[in-house]
Amino acid sequence: MGDAAMLLAGGDASGAVLVCDEGLSFWGGVDPETGRIIDAHHPQAGARVSGKVLMMPTSRGSCSGSGVLLELALSGLAPAVLVFAEDEEVLTLGAMVSERIFERPVTVVRLPADDYAALARQGEARVFGGRLMAYGLDIALERAEVDRLELSAADRAVLAGESGAAAQTAMEIVCLMGVAQGATALMDVTRGHIDGCILAHSANLIFAEKMAGMGATVTIPTTINAISVDRENWVSQGVSEDFGSRASRLADAYVAMGARQTFTCAPYLLQDRPRRGECIGWSESNAVIYANSVLGARTPKHPDYLDLCIAMTGRAAVSGVYADAGRVARRVVEVAFPDAADDAVWPLLGWLLGKASPDRVPLVVGLEETSPSSDDLKALCAAFGTTSGAPMLHIRGVTPESGLEPVADADRARIGAAEFAAAWRELNAGEESVELVAIGSPHVSLDEVRVLAGLLEGQTIREGVEVIVTIGREVLAAARSEGLVVALEAMGARFLPDICWCSITEPLFPSRTKVLVTNSGKYAHYAFGLSGRKVRFGGLKTCVEAAVTGRVSSAPPAWIGATS
Image (cartoon, rainbow, N blue to C red; front, side, top):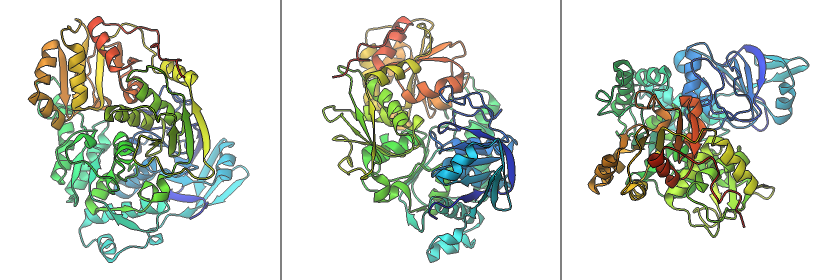
């Protein structure tokens, strides 16, 4: 397709132009009930996207943005037109699902750089008759069509409906996304991971039950992400019957379609995890980035709903990081690593790396003498996904493919003491007094439970402070077998399986909380937009000190600003 202007979804539409200075995650960044940008860290925070010609280079952050867009479309609050300058999958997929399954079109356009810059200077624009028009602009748009792909006989049979209506719809969406990605063929994948199982809005339930009702069935081993309730205990936890039953129905729909009841946002912590070079079809941004970067498996950051379509067909477009070329770094980021840093440095660095490389795979240099644990890398990958749209990163001397040479014209960026200090300030907007310690975004590992138990041993959690740990079922069972859960519960900590911080709502989220502290860069970024509470960020030791004292010092840790 080259640099042609493309019409990827929808048709005729118009509106006022709203230009986002940087990519936006619709999940955690746009309120599905109002259409307003709620990401407090975004330059356009507070603006309303509904009915706009919304422009951004590409999206970023969570794979769940496709579901937010579908919810906006179903309630009449979606942008009229989405305009991107680069490859974008999450919102494009949401628009395709909205149009093809629910007959609620959202127009999506991708423009070459010069056309994008010209449109960004306009006040209003419209798409009409396959052209994008504004004052002084008239741009012909090429329509994405399935016939651009070379398909196997089996693929064509599914497209013809020989495997049923649900599989036919799934294959249509896989193929159209392939065209949008510039692919020319499809490939087999070995396993899937479903992300759209959080009841953040009604669209996820509507979609899942629609597909289950059509007879959808997964054809490859498929795991399920964290959901919105503790599936076995929500009734006794005071969750409302309406919310709890709908959240359970959402999980039940994916189980009925053949997915495993794993309910974790960290599927790489399961016993059977992907191997290096294995092509998989995962969603959930932190899981995708970890799988690519740390395990060396291969999966683009598939948007919600496309993950189910891939799991149903066992097929995905040959594009992005499935191919060798897509895994090569296009930016080199030099890091001056802080001296004597604690574990908070890794999520903080991940957040900064996403800022430094929001739209391309980076190679990180300067960490060759560090020895990050798998949990350090988990935290880094999750935070990286909040500020970058890239599906992976390389760390020289640490990650398995870091020996790949970057492209010849790779540009460079640098992260040093000033950047670490600024990031710490931005993620620490709350007061010293805290009421909630939030651990487990992504879900904690067994090693993290062990460390938490060691740090809390012999201490008492302060009255008025709650310590809540979100955890996957498999890890929870292992922690129980070691006696860690009983010990920590005796100290006053609570474990919540099946659910993650990014999906917790009241009453599980303590309503009296004014300020929370977390060791997660991901949750520190999203928490205010999701909960309305102020946030403090620090390492696990800082979180334990807050649990015991009810306070977090407003002074940055000593290692902030201390680089060699």
